[in-house]
Image (tube, rainbow, N blue to C red):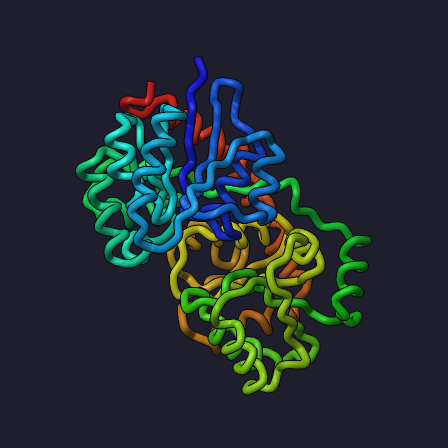
Length: 372
């Protein structure tokens, strides 16, 4: 008998939780599982939606019109009664909207993945709803890394937190010299340039200001540095002005949201991450799978991924000088940088491949209380 699993998301836009669900769906579950996806939001023809539907997986869009939309509770309840999933697996703030409909529909097996350090996972109302999910409604918490799992235990006071690492299809990220040359040429990268890349939304959490300050400092010592910024967000114009203020506009490119992330990583020499808080970013795993050395602020679950001095470097949060020093170090020592990248790729393949992520979810769905 098939076990039907419903993934519930607030929306289907490029982001860590949405990418994780897309990655799992595209890898495919065993024939014992029937998977469907539900978005609280309206239909968006993003590449994520296209990828999921291409796998033959059904997506429901509930058309949420505002942050507080009481009709969502009714629409979700009706969908649950129609589909009758055995497992409802929520992500991000969809957990808050799921509590009543899931309970009224009699769904026994409920899970919620926490994608960030628990105290940073959304604003207080969401964290209050998450607490109720775990302590009152019987949702099983899932942490995306060891450190995230520990934060769930301490913040929400729960004893058992299964850990399932974020995962990506690591085989899709490779080093190819011919494609690398072509992509660098199309980006206007000169021979000898050392290309740094950052992928992430332009929001406070990602602290692009720190990244730009560090890049400007490093560029004083290494004139051949170039920085690619991938993503969008409401702070993009602010950061663009910062780039001008620090006088590095000739060396920084804003690329927006891209579908060719693997090609951009292949064309780069170093991945730099400057966040103030994080869970376990898929973009870091993608960079390491591409064989790139990484430098990241030491926040959230990143130290579960980046081993300092082995697969990359960890830098103190908010310290532009320390970040700049590491950028300069790797730009001036390509052999060492390559060794870090090689070790990072091996670690990503061993611990963070989507194959392991899907198998771990299947095992949890099959073994969880009330999940049969």
